[in-house]
Image: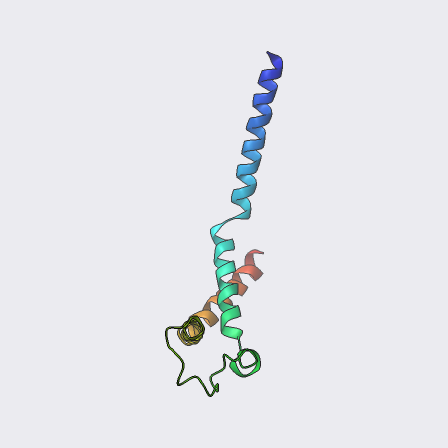
Length: 105
């Protein structure tokens, strides 16, 4: 009978430990930082240096005759639109994130 209560206490301890570790590791702030880093990564891609090597640059001669429903064309349009739309908000969010990290650690 004592063994059973010890096992239950151990299981309860492990469940509580796993729950607290999961919720301390995965917070809204961490999700915000991860999405901000991904947006920064997309906006930093340089068309002439990086994307031109893969044939995805804006100066690609076959781009005008390309089928616009291909995955390649859709990804290029997504990257260009993200870069255009999020430029100013991304600068502001980066500044706020840096200030928050400096002030609160």
